[in-house]
Length: 158
Image 1 (cartoon, rainbow, N blue to C red):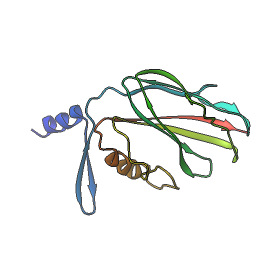
Image 2 (cartoon, rainbow, N blue to C red):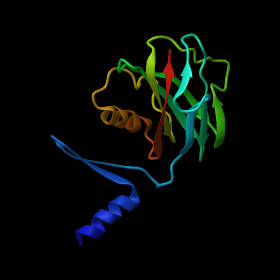
Image 3 (tube, one colour):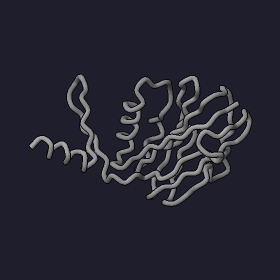
Image 4 (spheres, one colour):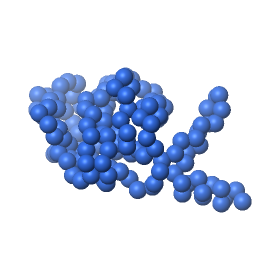
């Protein structure tokens, strides 16, 4: 009976987490990803210089809210955009905003966080995190949605 129970959890997209204060259960409806493609305009691993602009190509399977989160080489994490997008391929930014690169140089990672409902403005993915998943869980819970997806890309700044 146990293997069937475990298989049922995997097929429904459930995740069980053990915490000191008890067991937590999170879930995601559907196993199909919401983000099909996410990369900088020069491709993953592209090279940029301080002061240049970077754009991102993002393809979504369904409409929803996307938060772009940068992780600098020094480990500092910060949001730099939140947008609602329709299904399809987009070039971000898609409005009169620019993503201009600033120091520090080195490897920069960017995560696109998709949710079906927006997180409140006061709940942000910013700081130096030792546990990204825990912070992301708070963000997702605040959004109130059940569908989410996260994609990561990277580039280098010189």
